[in-house]
Image (cartoon, rainbow, N blue to C red; front, top):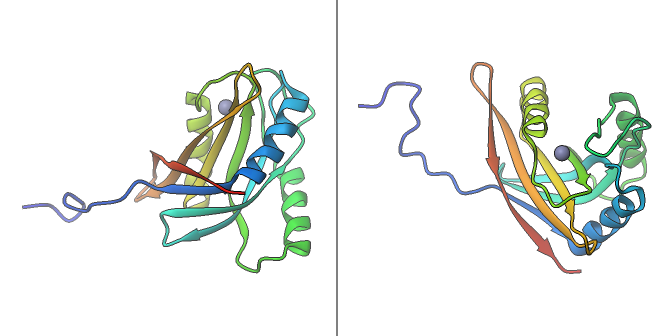
Length: 168
Ligand SMILES: [Zn+2]
């Protein structure tokens, strides 16, 4: 007999992040431009049913101190970028849904990336997406997606997502 906090039997589908090739290409080209340093910023878009994130755009937030294996998304520049987006954005549903950054090497999210995602999730108590755009030697972009959620009382759960790359 399951206890009150056991969620056995609850079947959840893998979370999905949907993004257009055009958006990816634009962010990928910005990332290639600063390689071998990292670039990153915030994801704007919306959630459908809590499991599907629709990406409207990947907004860059410059970090003066970014390095080869280091990008830190800083709060005040990010807030400015988001405010500008919300002021001029065309979709009333769209807002902050997560974080993205590039890796100049073909590497998936690091333990540090997962830790940073957990820290954000524990602060905001809503699902947060993380996309890592990993560049390979040919300059192609492989996208890795994670979604973090808070769990009562202080835990963050991180899941891998399917990244659906849509045309155009
Ligand atoms: Zn990273």
